[in-house]
Image (cartoon, rainbow, N blue to C red):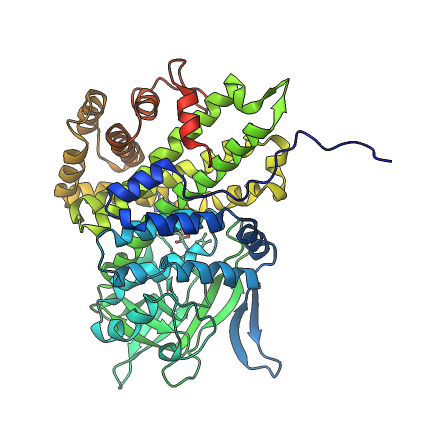
Length: 528
Ligand SMILES: Cc1cc2nc3c(=O)[nH]c(=O)nc-3n(C[C@H](O)[C@H](O)[C@H](O)COP(=O)(O)OP(=O)(O)OC[C@H]3O[C@@H](n4cnc5c(N)ncnc54)[C@H](O)[C@@H]3O)c2cc1C
């Protein structure tokens, strides 16, 4: 005897190619990595299967556990992860999403890596934190050639070798960073951790950090004060002698999301460290790492939006209400098309920024990464929240995967420079490096009348702190519009310009004007 038959529930979205994303693939080819498309499809197909989706669920459900002491009472300061976390990490490192792009001479290596990160983070975003930091540490570490010679090959390798051991004896390394302290995060100049030089030329650090993610990494860049001011140091978890360095993890953070990843509060006491870059110029040194993690925040947010959009599209194509598939209902079509436009704008911008890193477009990159980090990361929670609602009540339930995407969504906007800090950085760049604005404007001007009008408006805007977000937002939308007009189908670009540039839009997603061809936009964005 059965109580009822189950029907009209969407099947799980599995066995699809996550990389079959028209905006992504065109971006990869355009920005210099057409050679990467085959590997991207292979990774995309793996990402679309059920097994990694299970790893993602388990890595978040069975959270990392701090082990402060061993059974005899010795401090160990280790973090234990579920095996599924290690599987996710193994794929990410193996696919070259950590430091490998720096060892790859092919044009487009950073684009290929960003595209891979975009695809693989759709499975699980938490583990991309140590992956991103390992990628990002390399340019900063190059400020000390001895350290870089020793560690870069292992950071840029494709072997995932977890566990705390002497770094040079391992087959692959991971890196993290410790800047934020209790009394100041954005304002790192308020840091109180002190560093003193030892007779042997190394340094000893004493103090604390309030946030240090992925404390199981092998190496950390840490900011500390010396007589010359804030300086950047390399802190290994295990010393060359094989002895553990002092890195006392007080506790792990109980976070809104990002739960697969461990974020810790370490304390240092006579912790051995090596100076990286010039003493007293620590911010200048570590900013080379932060610039790259900011790029990954853009890519990660574009990835999170795309993952949520895929789920929303899939659900709408399988669920009926009031006699018709949701995907055929005009109000739902407007929502899906609006989300798809936002997602495509984020994806093309992420690929363009990765291309700028590849080609060493310093002036453009300096401004555009800050602009993109502010804007794309701010769009993520809004997009994911709306996509979640497309699944109705199912979207609010853990099994759908949407709650995890939703909890993870605000993070990219907070770390690596919170919204205001990012917008103020944009203003500072405009004032200090006017060539960066010229590079950005040169790219967007003369493409389209609507964009030229917006640029004219931008030039007249007040550039004071109170207007920092307004200016940044405008620049971001203009840049996205120019990319869409040049590289995406007219229906996507026109809808973006009409709504985001010309203002023919409401205050929620799903308020595209009647003239927009929602069918074509949905068709383009639907998961394959
Ligand atoms: C999950 C997680 C993991 C993290 N991992 C790491 C890590 O591995 N390493 C690390 O070093 N840090 C890490 N952080 C810390 C993170 O980078 C900081 O929290 C972030 O930079 C903000 O600094 P804060 O928390 O001190 O906030 P504050 O600097 O106090 O800022 C609070 C608010 O004020 C705004 N604000 C700041 N200055 C101004 C201003 N001048 N004008 C207007 N508004 C302003 C900010 O935008 C923000 O909205 C992590 C944080 C999280 C949540």
